[in-house]
Image: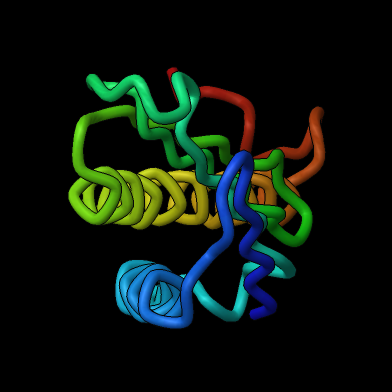
Length: 124
């Protein structure tokens, strides 16, 4: 699983990059074999004016499934990253489980007898 981290409007420190990568790897471990790439964009939308304007946008590219996009905003960037990573882990797990269920259902349908087979006729 490749993780790309970029900052918008400020440089990403080594500590911030390490924290983000560690949180994402922990949150996405369960589904890591299904993840191709994770793109993280974080920044401060208001600049030095302050306020609840720090954001973290996580886009997870899955194999054979739609992408997952998580966005969070708040006053403290580390807290925003933690919340976004946790939500990303839950959403990816749901998407992967749903995909596995779809494949299982398709296999069950293909294993059923063909239409018009004697076993399909109700017994009276």
